[in-house]
Image (cartoon, rainbow, N blue to C red; front, side):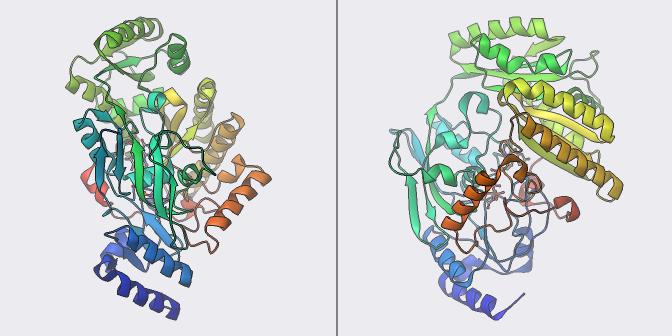
Length: 484
Ligand SMILES: Cc1cc2nc3c(=O)[nH]c(=O)nc-3n(C[C@H](O)[C@H](O)[C@H](O)COP(=O)(O)OP(=O)(O)OC[C@H]3O[C@@H](n4cnc5c(N)ncnc54)[C@H](O)[C@@H]3O)c2cc1C
């Protein structure tokens, strides 16, 4: 839609940005949706080559009250990067510098730096950046900070937030700010660094991050086990902790998911055993301690599993991880829509949650599978349904609502790592009382008085199941298998 204000603001942008302003239809279209596959629309895609251009863009946006949706790789599974209210997409994938400071064990990077590239650079210097979302080969540090991304290793190493020392970037007004310092401690004034982390691009735009690194663990050992029941498998995090073990990964696949993936691959994980809940556990450390921990874990697995195996080579470990990845790919084949709900509950409530999902599956007659990071209570509940079938879609929406209520009742949160975006807006209110909700809205108003930063996210109810369309694959989908 080209209104006068729109035309004026674009003319001003063109003056400032030149070739960084992209208006061709193909690029507008590929920036109009993310991993949730709900289509928004934008009048321009802006691809800054230096951080200062972000400030200039926001100054113009603020003057004309133009919505700005910041984008990294567009791998959000919640519609977080979708320009649902039009305006401009600020694509920061080009700001991808990575400067390692090994003496201070930190890295300064642009928001467009790809997580796996950063990890590789750190690891070449014997250093380690632990947050490892399954999308790490294509997602960006900016997106990870905005969603407080997690991943497999959080059980031992924590989430993105635990590694951010300082953030620089721009307020909605276009003013430059730095929150935090490149120091190990910080207790000066309000901690707006942590407020920005997880705020999904609604409070400011990150243009540089300083991240903490740690020494790289020398070795890893990977185990896979089939358990007689979900209850038995889900005791892992608490039991292992009580024995003094701190695995770097504890992943779980429920029996339904294992059945689904075995049918999909035509192979049994443990030949002759049938479909049973599966645990994948990784230990890391140096030789002697890794050896001692492995003995404790193997003894425990002997008691709680039907069968278990330890990877003897890197490629065998990779085969174990492939099982985890196939959980998601196999489910995708079952229907045209798969919603991946990344709920999180206290560790001792996981059994109750998985039992609840089993009863939900039966009552709703839907295909629902659970896998995920049981080491930190962050289980991914996947709903498969066909959008063309209105009755089935309605059942899925009701089941989704029931799940969210249960998670909140169990003292959990409706998102552990993906954020609210658009997808969770129908449920997010369940988690906050009036005072909490109002306080969040006041913060949004204080930092973004004109509401130009990623509007439509978190606060406004959007019903994704009413809008979804089948869209072309995104660039990362074209080059990668779904590993979520
Ligand atoms: C196959 C697959 C596997 C996945 N596995 C995981 C997983 O294991 N763990 C996990 O946590 N997530 C996972 N995700 C979800 C997704 O990859 C993460 O949410 C990731 O953090 C998004 O990064 P991105 O660069 O793609 O950001 P985008 O999708 O482009 O944006 C995500 C959000 O961040 C905001 N944003 C982006 N950059 C900035 C910036 N510089 N400043 C301010 N706001 C910004 C956007 O506005 C948006 O709200 C997975 C996704 C896929 C497709």
